[in-house]
Image (cartoon, rainbow, N blue to C red; front, side):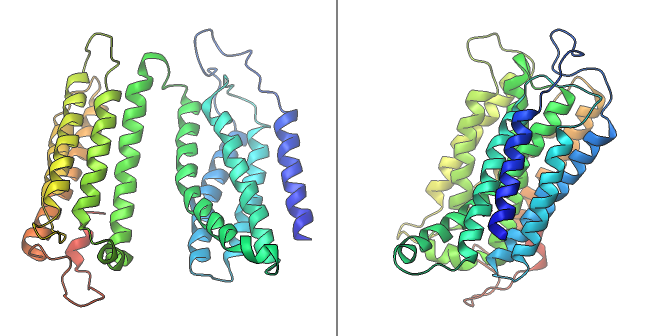
Length: 346
């Protein structure tokens, strides 16, 4: 029965993808979208997909990690909602869209979902003899890896959807647009990872023999390299805020390398340091002073800058005065989390 349902879902997705043809006759020349408003069907597609991929599937992923009996029902509900929204996205009227990354990337997302469904059915059959006994551990690991990737991939697809709906991030604006979306998403992801490490990652940090600042600095250095070479279109004249963007990228990878070097004592043991907190503070200061062409953009950058500065100060205070360079508040194996420690990730 489950196999028949999965087959029907996969066939429906394939037939819907092949049968649908996007109309582009109302799109002005040189534009990516038509001036028509977004109709109710497309709004339903957007809202249902956000609910399925942004709430239902991540919840089901967590239930799967803790091996809850609600994992399969929740993921099945999410799959049915995603399938419904998929067809809604192919039946809308109103605004028309030129060929775009959102439609293209949807195929990859659909493939991941189909693969998860097939693997889930295989695992529910509990085949554990002979050849199945040898491959089952790898299948389980693959299922877990794909499941944990799904929230990240879903977030990317949601961003692609917003970009496609508004018809921007094209031509000469592509590099700047990518840099801003990637940077914003990185800060969101950084906050989530910090929260996870704070709540359940302390023992893992002990096993790695590294301090939190080692991993923070490693990411900062890598991200600085990305920013250095994506914020300016090399080979063209310097424009607008290119110099400030590129300079911040250089500051990031230099500071990241310094933070990595300071993350170990002379005897090789892990050591806390203030470099990531200082980088966050300096980035917030630069963000708040970032000149913009519109007042709304200036206000958004200023507010975001103040938030980053507060996060940087909170991190410095936490390490210097609350923890006094220790790994946590308590010296016990399972450490207590002080309420002040939530400030930086939040």
